[in-house]
Length: 118
Image 1: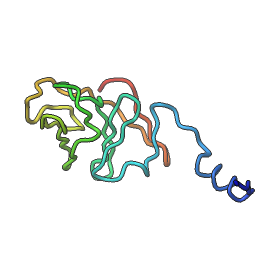
Image 2: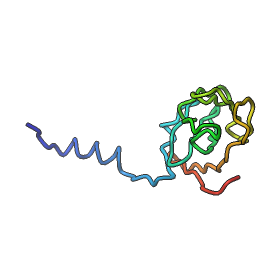
Image 3: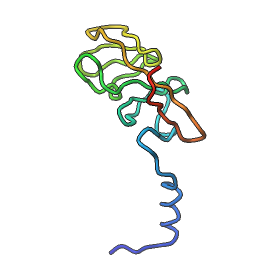
């Protein structure tokens, strides 16, 4: 049996008070050294700064948001290609094509990935 409580509703509404758009994320969800899938982009927290790239590796479409992030270098979990997530450059193959990169705008606790390629 579920009992509705005004206090429970107040907590739920404060946590989810702002509905995010597909290109938005909560800054607190991307800790330094981690990544988050935001729409078709992967957002990386590089020492407190946010960089965004296409979410899939150009080599065989591996999920870059699941790769290991070391500084500004992400390693694709499928075949080991490495990229600079801020510049998009290939650092190690087998990938040969660079990543598309996107601007990240942070306003308070909400970040937004701009769809325009940098």
